[in-house]
Image 1 (tube, rainbow, N blue to C red):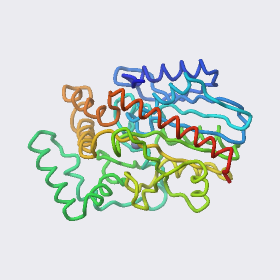
Image 2: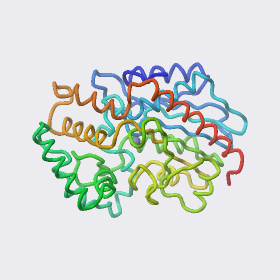
Image 3: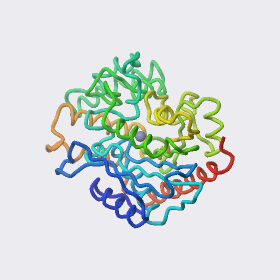
Image 4: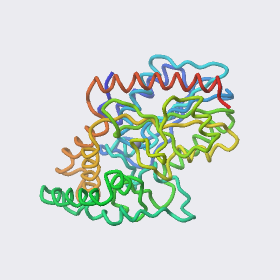
Length: 355
Ligand SMILES: [Zn+2]
């Protein structure tokens, strides 16, 4: 079990696996290109009856580079054989943010975090005064040792006043005022959101029940996969209880993640009126949160103030890859074993006690 070395090879493995599994494949080509000119696309593999009452949706690459792990899980599953029945069909979405995946970034072609982008841009856009205060320190104009030292002290000083949870919330809850910053939610629905909405409506709107696994990396203990729900109401919680064990809800303060607005899990519930939906992110830990944050800041600086194809790029892209897609077979095995267990549990719930 190992991660692919590029978006291109991950995509090829996925398409080969989907073909071997006899899936119907629909490709959504992205208007951009990869760093070496490669075609970018989100690919959808559909297995089983299109009118099955219960459907399992598995998404990789919501956060670009995090798709290396998700893609590995999806391709290995397709190779091993996907169990479908009259009661359950499967929809597998590969690389919903193909640009970020190919450029080894968490964000998309617009520097937008897809999991902050699904808000109502016609309404009041969320504010984040903590981020506003920290913005110049988080992504400074230069990224040398002296600047890194000074800005690290500024972040620690903020943590001294607001606690580390306060720092994490300010940094990662999402922000809509700093287009070159980190965790930027954008100013309109981006390509990946529009594409995901069309996929979800097309393949899932006629279902009775849907379970969703959205595959992420970068937070939590090494190799542990925390299940994270978004903002379920009481009925939503009952459905989650049926499909998953020990999921966390960030607004309750028990998750490795800050509470976030505009994520795809909430959005998919809204795109599927009348369908019973239970969706979680699986968040696999990699390295510590300071190293992850440092990698994201370096990458944001590279794309905002330097040249992502220039000499500064290689070490920063290595840093990002290490933070979100560790090349460690032990980690890959832990990720895949957890994926299989959660997936099987979700299907049991879907056909069992789900309401
Ligand atoms: Zn993520």
